[in-house]
Amino acid sequence: MKKLLIIDDDDVLMSTLKRAMERRGLMVTTASNTEQACNCLQEQKFDYATLDLKLDKESGLNTLTKLLTIQPDLNVVVLTGYASIATTVEAIKRGAQDYLCKPAAGDDIYAALTGHKAEDVDIEEKPLSVDRMEWEHIQRIMAENNGNISATARALGMHRRTLQRKLQKHPVSH
Image 1: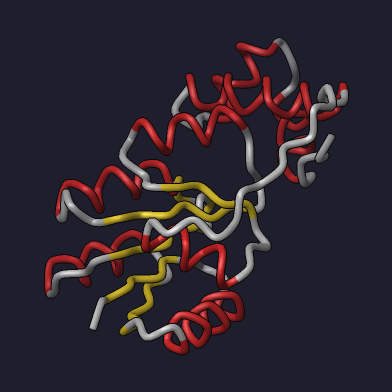
Image 2: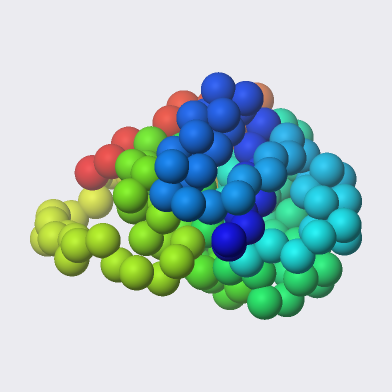
């Protein structure tokens, strides 16, 4: 039986995802932070992991690096409610197998974990909205500054509180 480690600080989402993946035949363990996840990986071998991009005050990107240091062949799918092109590229560069936006269907998560593609996805050929372009730019600068809000605010020439308010908003689709 294949083993999955779910790393998320949202208990409701974690238990829902756990049940969904157990129904698909995976043996599931959960962790709510980087330390717990690393301990689990040191204690046993996992085939897959799902990783929330924002773990309370921790960066999922930094967690991803730590996980793959412990188990380099671990297939990790990053899940996030704050998707951006910059974080997607960074997650893949750091070794994530896939990157999905929340809420993601159980079938899509399972397909991403196992490498079986669910269905071809049609991508709309629409330009990004101004709000979405701003979000993408902020995320790119944030990635360049390793998630440091103060440094990102300085680089963008905006007040730190203004940047924090913008970051608390969910990204606009298109």
